[in-house]
Length: 228
Length: 84
Image (cartoon, rainbow over all chains, first blue to last red; front, side, top):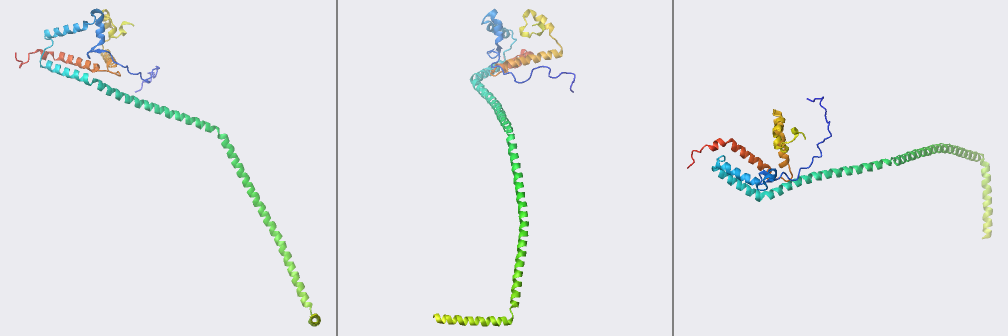
């Protein structure tokens, strides 16, 4: 249920970036007692104050049997010894291991951040290049206009050529027709003239011409005999 | 600042009386106080980059003391099989 009367996002605070963790925790002495306790007692009792307090308290508890010494005391003593020994011996190694884990996490996060930044950077470059490319669109349009003009021109010339060819074909046809007609008339006339001439040569004229030819041949042969 | 908003560590011994009278003892107030105490303990000793054994060891010591206090009746009775 959303309470619409409640105002949302009234403050400026945001959850990111998260402030980093402090480097070291609060100071603790002997692993159990915070340093503030020692500082609290320092002005009145000096350095040994808290230790005297601890010893006195311990003796009081033991003597009054407020702290009973039984088998669990021995067990606690052994366990504590082992724990303290383990911490003293393996502490630094565990700390180094934990630090290494932390380092790896940080490194991977940093790498991711750097990668993202790099990708965004390249994206910015690409965008700028695209903007530069978009500026050249006037050249593109000019080239296209030239192309179209050339296409139109070529088409026009093709059609002109077609027209020319067609007209030439028609005119050639007419010329050929006239030539043919004249040729035919010429042939026909020649044939007619020959036919009439042959017809006009009568048989008697033929005999006369043949006798003349023979006389001529004789004369020629005589002259030929004479020269030889 | 004013007395009621100061945390317990900054209250002087003479003003403890009045400070206790200002804090709310309702369930919500107590719960809030417990929440604040726990979160401040965590922020100081546990959520740090290089914490040591101190963070958990104090909690364990407190647990030991508490359980000793709860079982004191059992400890103080003489055990049946004790020889002496």
